[in-house]
Image: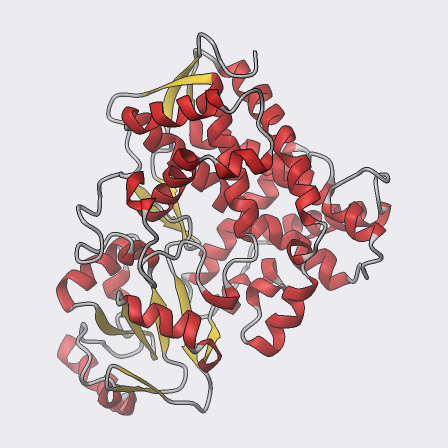
Amino acid sequence: MRSLFESLFRLQQGRALEALASVPGPTPVFLVGNGLDLLGGDLHVKFEEWRARYGDLMRFFLFSQPSLLTAKPEHVVRILVDRPDEWIKNVPRGATAPTGGESVFRAPDRKEWAPKRAAHPFEQRWITESYDALVPRIRELVRARLDARVGQSINLYEEILRVTFDAFAIIVLGETLPPEAFDDHERMLKEVGNRGALPVPFSPSPFFWWRRWRWRKRIAARIARGSLGERATDLVSMMSRAGTDMTKRLVHDELGNVFLAGMKNAALAASSSTFLLTEHTVFGDRVRTELDAAGLDPDRTTLLALPHLDRSVKEAGRLYPSVAGFVREVKPGERIELDGAILPPRTQVFLVSWIVHRHPEIWADPTRFDPDRFLEEPKPGTYFPFGLGLRFCVGRDLTILVAKTVTAEILSRFDVALDPGADYETKLVAVLTIPKRGVPCRLTRRATPRGT
């Protein structure tokens, strides 16, 4: 029976198969391509297995769409840095349409993303003022949440996630949001994953659309209030005072997407950094010593310049990039040559940072946590947790700032005792690498924490 479906696929997609004949990969079948091969596991793990089996460039089909998986740094550089305008960004658009709208995150090509990015609040000169004001607020959030949980069995990932959500609410809106807003946010992210798993994106649940409506209404209501005062540094206040046109697209899509495309990334970066520095005490002690020497509550500039913390967060982002990879697609009507293969229009290319960051021919002992790798700059195309080129993640600086501040505050004030057997095995949820079992632990206060 399988051979029949393989033959039917060859009849349907003969030209694409011929164009990609020089690229190895699993045999596709009628209707689903290699979709069945991807069931029953996490995509980033399956891709890693495929790379080991077929090599650093392989092909597969998602239904009828030809796709390539590459782990070659030179391809990463060519596609993201040297010749980005040959491709469009594949988000995928259908899965993210209800949550991302027309934000810069979903813009397919330079014509659309360049003006949106130029107008984005993270690209404005005043943004550093917002970042400066956010650091002490994050410290307050960490202390308020974790001080009450000392001695208890907790999932530190969930605690960090809540702190990060509040931090994003403060920098975007100038105020925290009620608990149901967090639930709305999580339901919308889950829906992205649900829609992405379907051949035709579809959201039948009225509860999802109700939560989406409530989320957007909440942000729009805050926008309508304008600036919270001359000294307010949240994005809404800063944009209001700058005379920014608060259009519906900006309200619903750009500001809302700061949460939806960025908040959990920052929480994951802080969680993996804290977990690894707790598990590897030599490096954790280095960071603690560095933080203690930095004095009482160092400001943003000082915090970002701490070398041991910086290298540790980078290494955590190598082992556990919050976003497992990036996708680009050949423009309609175009054909692109890649390693001798002529890619048909609409061919997707998966640039999977999870695989490149753990490639044994790129990184020595690749699964070992070693922040000192970053004493030297990584070779081009070998490290890209936030993408590369002109279209690197617009929220990169905020993500790094939040991750470093949260990690630093936890390590400065608390001793973290991981539960026996605690690990950081990940699952993929809407392209994000989430710890399957969280970070189970107990906290105790340090004997002489910084800041007391």
